[in-house]
Image (tube, rainbow, N blue to C red; front, side, top):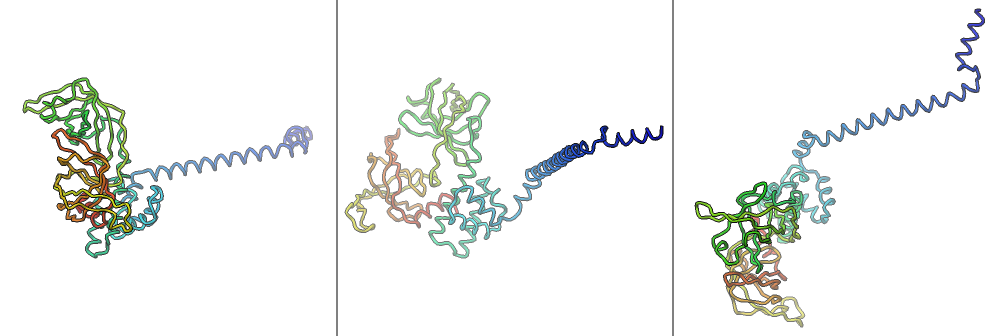
Length: 371
């Protein structure tokens, strides 16, 4: 009996058959299973570590830490590379960050107000040490506008429901004339704008149920074209007029300008000029007339302006402009890209600058940004 028990135990220990060959065949299977279990455990641990790190990088604690630390050269390099800025842009932006000792520039660019404050501080510091020449001032404002456009792109809208009460929406009548109307209220079904009496009492007043064209510019500077249907008008107790318009989700983004534009109302002088196509020198290329005309400049940028005048000057004509209110005595050379007749009988001349000195362009930048 004792011998039988020992033999049974030995047989059980050898896997049932007692065959050494079978034992050798079974061993690799257990090893493979064990390695698979270990591999899965490692992957699971790595996954949980990755999730924990990802959660930390997205946490408010980490974001606040990154926002509040000083800008590093690496931050500027990544920002410029991601947005296809030039090496010169990168160099100037890094100098701005250094002299201001600003917080992380990659977070500051999300706010136009913070970017403008940063550049104003940098400009004042540079002015104290007289470390900016005219070319650097020009590059300075070019970069500022690029960053403003970046901030604006992050705040695009897709519906009139996202417009801002208090801003203007511009009505475009059938003759292409532009009239800014103030947005008074936005409801679930309509947006409501204030209509001046001269438009309300005009024969060209938009009729109820008609579709009309508008442009809208956000406070960040993004501009959109849109079409909306007039629902009805309402006269308020204080004799103001309101126009109710339907919402639309079809907003067409306008191409961004290369220069920041400012709407103004200042006197300017302009002169006819002719082009000397056979000129050998740049200074002899344009022949300026001594005859001077006075107009009203309604908007201006580093790349062009708009002048209102009683003269119906044709599109494609060359013209020169001075802006005494901006301290600009130079005769800026331009070309009339579009002439538009206004309701009051005057004409709006949309002018693109062809030749302007860096000094004069910088004066325009300083006036627009109020530095």
